[in-house]
Image (tube, rainbow over all chains, first blue to last red):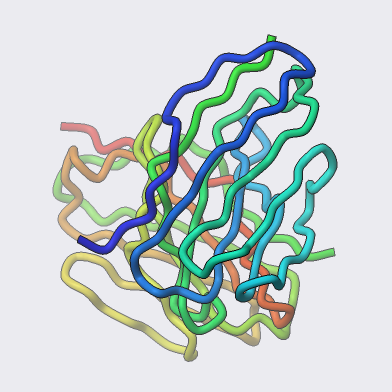
Length: 113
Length: 110
């Protein structure tokens, strides 16, 4: 089944403790992206990647890192999480530069206390 | 500034009626336009995309695009209670970034 898989689905952590949210897709898509979704603010792009070793900042990249060492994987790294990074995170992937839209993962609900 | 604007709703529509959702965007160079449906706590699901002016129909859904007016709409015919969700309009800008609107909450009244 074609899908984008994110882990974990839920995560509660403490301020300053490094964490990684994994994302993997099995559709051989070139484009991958991370979004966060907050009430009243909608979906905002954190980082995106056009292919292996090619990444660029989205609208809200501060406090986040990404890497794209393999085509299928695009992990999101929070080096020192803070409470304002409490949010619902989505990974998404697409072929053809997003022209036909993104396929989203199931989401990761992160709480930083 | 790239913007995608939607009325937040809620939009209440009787079961069986036509639901009409609207969206405007700011970047005239935008390439492709999408409608996503999102149930509470779930991930967005792509239901329609359109890139040429005019109408595109898929089952009960019709997407309409007017590039001159920078306007995209989604019509849902024969609305069902299962259509109750938040509908996100999204736009692919010329820099390959997809920007989302904040969504319109749709409530189908049984």
